[in-house]
Amino acid sequence: MAQSLYEVHTLKGGQWVIDSTYPDRESSIEVAKQLHGEKRFDGVKVIRDTFDPKTGDGKEIVVYDTSKAPREKSAAPPPAAAKAAEAAAAVAATGSAPSRPAGKPRKGRNQDVSVAVKAILWLTVILVGGLGVLYLVSKAGDLMGKGF
Image (cartoon, rainbow, N blue to C red; front, side):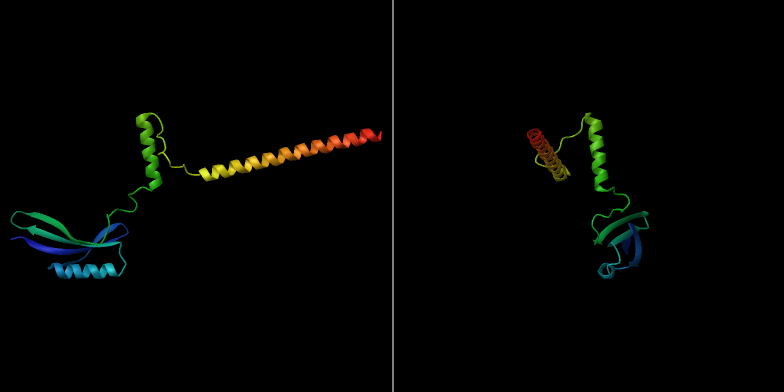
């Protein structure tokens, strides 16, 4: 006859640890709910571990789980690194860089426009100032020509 045992596992720092074991489902789920309510763990789950001594086979089934997709924090690359890796793979596969999706502005476009507007304004100020200086020099020359 197969024997069942309920294990309460806790997730902290990316690692699952067996917190306690119980002979019945109800008490193990009750403890798991209490642990989850304490907010000390990233996740809590109850696993029914069934072992058949005649065949030597074991089977584990998750019967309660508060965690989302359990992942190790250090194993998942940051989204920017993952996108860069995908872009590099696409360039290597096709030989050309993938185009941006239509309607999606590239990052920093507002900043590029701002720099361009500032450059145009400065160039306009310099041009008008230069023309003003030339006009004043011309008027000064006319006045000096009349005076001599």
